[in-house]
Length: 260
Image (cartoon, rainbow, N blue to C red):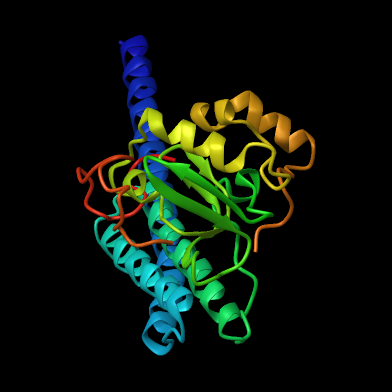
């Protein structure tokens, strides 16, 4: 009888402590989610303030502000349905990307950029455009430039799009836009990347590395070398002939809903 009571006490005690532990873990997860949501909202609100108070003065700055506004809408949509820490982080990433667009516009207009922004995921590894280069692709000319020009009004701050790196710079066409919407790249993107960036000093990786999307070993190799694939990093609309070619219209334009 005593032995039976001891067994009951032991089992009951184990259940009690397991229950407390589960509740504690659930509380920690809930707290982490709320913290992540609050952090994302902080950047989203900052971005919203910027896009409401700044207007572009030329084609490049106007396009950058338009891209920032699109990122604001994407981030707002993402945070409204965020149910996990990762989803909140993706909303934060969209807002930060928008703020990088704002900084690019402010630089063009001669305005102070404001406090330094956290880097985007994969931004440093993606490198940057360090020279003017024009290629012929599918009967169209595509130009990349380190600076905003009338020919290159589409900015990208550098980072990962649908699992592949896109160098920071100014472009005549937003060649990453289809993949940004749909989360998919096509085989043609590898040829375009090779033609546009092969041998460029600011882009320290090959088209094969672009295609593989910085596999783990490659990323670790960059980190071991200080993560420098082209120096420190300082948009585009959804138009142009790239619609469909680099991913089509299967996405909703809601930002980084693919897992980069």
